[in-house]
Amino acid sequence: MSFETIDYQVTDGVAHVRFNRPEGANAVNPKFSRDLRDVMLEIEFDSAVKAVSVTAEGKVFCAGGDLKEFNAAGDGLPKLAADMLVDFHGGIYRMNRMPKPFVAGVNGAAGGAGLSIVGAFDLVVCGESAKFTMAYTRAGVTPDGTSSYFIGRHIGLRRMLDLTLTNRVLSAEEAEQWGLVNRVVPDDEVDNATAELAQQLASGPTWATGHAKRVIYEGFESPLEKAGEFEGAMITQAMGGHDGQEGIAAFVEKRSPSFRGE
Image (cartoon, rainbow, N blue to C red; front, side, top):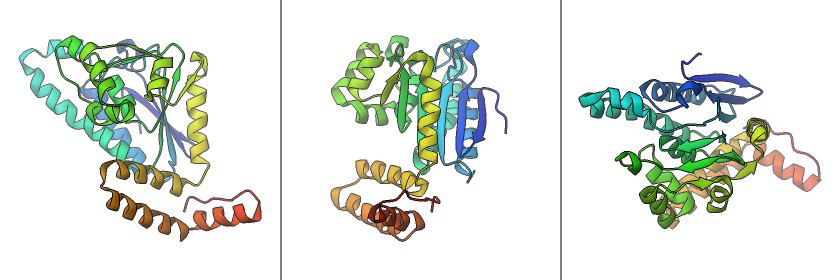
């Protein structure tokens, strides 16, 4: 399946998603938002996909909302934004809910909606010169892209307020220290490091990996007892599957496991 603003291919169990509108700094507009939603649908229903790598073409990962297109919409902007966010947020919801890990590789800048979507990925690799900024209030608007849900959980309330109210720009080093990204690598290694991490996840016990993601997110949203009950349901299900039994046996027998993703 082809998309106008996103390149997509599947290799060895990894879906490689690449934002591909570098002439527009990979900014978020209605077309990108629909492509994002559609590519998430493609990934969700493709059983061959075990993990996902997300990178971007050009010098900017995602500059945020396409302010030139928004400005051109004039009085029709509120309707355009509302329609666009159905797709943009819908794509993020699906990414978060499906039991497949998403690894992002951030090159250059991630601002506004670009930073919002970075916050929604499961794991994030970035280049040494990467920069991160909220930028919404600089343009006289409030945050979107589910940033209020994810980023505050990653970095804490006060830091989230600092980023949002002052439009502070974080370096790659600061972003790692704050917990916004997982790994910082040389700029020219971002794509490879992202693909390698996604491949590592796709080559492992993929049922356990995907459902561990569900357990973690569920735990953040649940009271103690509900979180514990969900953990119990998932681990007992895992222990009844091939990979759980094989993993335990391999550990006891001191050999490498042979996982099947089930």
